[in-house]
Amino acid sequence: MQTLHRRPSAHAHARLVQRGRLPRPRTGRRRPGTAHLRRTLRARHPRPACAGLRRRAHRLPRPRHARRRACVQRPRPRARDRFRDHHHVHPAGHRTGRHRQRARHPARCRPEHDQLHVPPHQRRRRHLQLHRHARRRALGAPFPRRARHARHARHLAQDACRVPAARPPGAARRRLAPAPGRRAPGRHTHRQRLEGHGDDGKGTAVVGERNAAWDARPLVGVVGLGLIGGSLARRLVGRGAGVVAWNHRPHPYAQAEADGIRCAATLADLVAAGPDVIVLCNPLKAMPDILAALGPLLDAHPAVTLTDVGSVKGMVRDQVEAAGLADRYVGAHPMAGNELSGWGAADPHLYDDALWAVTVTPSTAYERFLAVARLITEDVGNHVIVLDDDTHDRAAALISHMPHVVATAMIDTLVADPDRNIAAALAAGSWRDMTRVALTDPDRTRAMVEEDAENVERLLRDMASRLLAAADLLRDERSRDGAVRGRAQADMLGFFSQGQPFRDYKARQRAIARTERDGAPGAPGAASAASAAAYEERDLRYDMRDWQAGLLASARRGEHVIAFTGPGEARVQLRSAV
Image 1 (cartoon, helix red, strand yellow):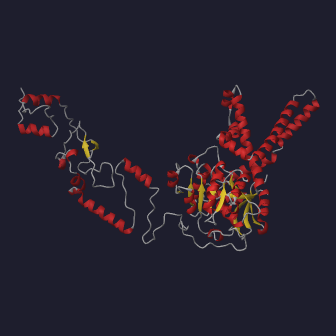
Image 2 (cartoon, helix red, strand yellow; image 1 turned 120 degrees about the vertical axis):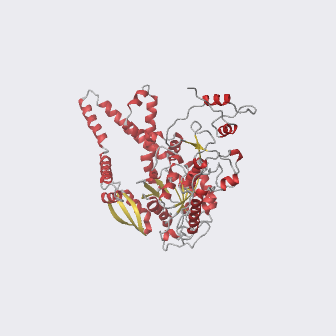
């Protein structure tokens, strides 16, 4: 039986072309005919007869307009034009259901009407949404901010760390700067004097209200945002203190401000912020220039105390005296760090369980010392020992500067060996532990060693004599003379046994650390409680007329100051008795 095809009318053909089921003629106006319709129907793929949800496509592109100021990209489409069906399922322009009419072309849409018009089925929802937003504004709650595109989402993520939290209803507006509890920059309250101490006529008795009553959080100025300065600033901010910082290059400012650190454009801006203590964390080679710039600026701020984190104290104190700032200076050296450098390596946990050496002289005012010591014990959360400059420099050369030279000599020996590749392949834990500090930047290590050259030279010669003596003992152990060989073996055993007290000390430290780790896992404050129980604590009293000697004697007994409880009183732990 032959199938009869009905020739479609002109109106039916036009509707098929308009809905996208039939292509438009390419050139000229062609009248619909049976041949054209047959060719088109044969070339068209059959539509699958299956039920289910229709596939969604990408969002419709929308033109830009000037009515929505919050969005710089394309605006959100209307609800009915939000999605488009795939071309192989439904051709472009086809709609089903209540939205059967063809969508307007983006180039011919009217932005004012198309973007501000709300469809009838969404008017009630929009009204309720505006009502909720009005109530939020009345209560002072934050307005909900939703990302309209990928770039807007990134901007909202960056603004999240800078937008202040909403204040509760009825609360006063909070200042963004300085830190809570501090006075505003440029506003100076009455400075109190700590009666009976330090009135030498040079301004050293003028202290902030924080020294007399330690109830307000400090404002600390940090010069230099490298490994040590950046870690210190981030730790202080994390523990609730205010920090204003300056760096010789502004590249870390964006991340520092995101962490809550106020960044100053110049040293003058840092001093004008009114910090209680300024910590110099810049390289030692830049110290003379920094001190020369700070000298005139600090003349108008007699209450500001100056300290640093350098590993050499004698040379820095000479530079401070040359700049005319000796009356406000208290030296400090945190025993913390690693082989890295720069703001990218800054970590607030670098100061976990760190010990600070605070250096003083007979002319150091007790109020200045107390400002730095309480900054370390209460705001940084570390322990303190008090030393003089010479004692500190000798000890630092022994446990830090000289080991850098020895570790560097070890890796130089490896590099010069013809079998260095095999040796590097066999290197394990002992080599890694002994050469870790040799990975430090060579220029940084050279500057550190040269700044304490006298002490390092003396220690290196003593180390060389000990190594030569050990080499002689190894030679004598191969002697054919039995008496010489016996003495050499006994002396070699004595060489390795001489450091047994230090081994016992490290064994006690490991046992205490294991007790802190396994004592009460998960309980808040368990580690600190276990530490207090493991170390012997006692109250220290020292004479205020000679407080430097009293605190130095405490340090030589292996005691660490954990808190200053009053004039001439402190709480100490016996931690480093070898």
